[in-house]
Length: 142
Image 1 (cartoon, one colour):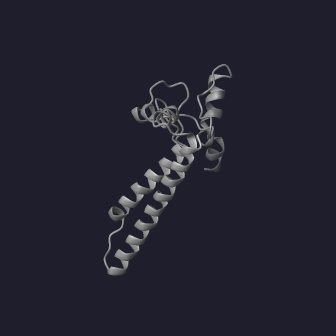
Image 2 (cartoon, helix red, strand yellow):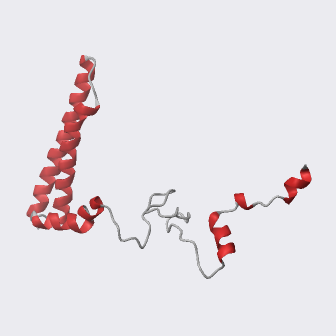
Image 3 (cartoon, one colour):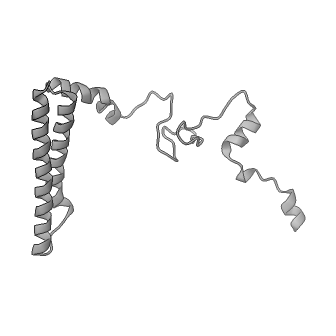
C-alpha cells in the first residue's frame, strides 16, 4: 500500500500557475491578479480571492460608470465648491443620512434605549452641522 502512495502523482497540491506554466510552456502565461497573484477563474470579471477587477476587460458595471472620481470632482465644480468645501459638504450629507438611518437600524425596547438612539442621532446631526459650517467657511476661501 505504501508503494502506491509513493508512485502517485502530486499535481493536485501544486499551485495552478506553476502547473499551467509547466504544461503550456513559458511562451504563454496564465492570467493572474495584479494585487494577490491568484489565477483568475475562466470567464470571471473579478478575482475570487481579493475582489479586484480583471485587467483588460472593457465591460464595467453601470455603477462604476456612473460614480467615478472624475464625476465626483466635476460635481464639486458644478456646485461651485472648492475641493475642501466639497469634501466637507459630502461629510455633512453622510452625517445626515446616518442620523436618519439610526432609527431604522436600532429599535428601542425601553425608554433608556430610546434615549440612547436619540443621543446618537443628535451627535450625528451635530457632526453634520459642523461639516456644513466648515464647508461654508472653506467656500469663502476660494
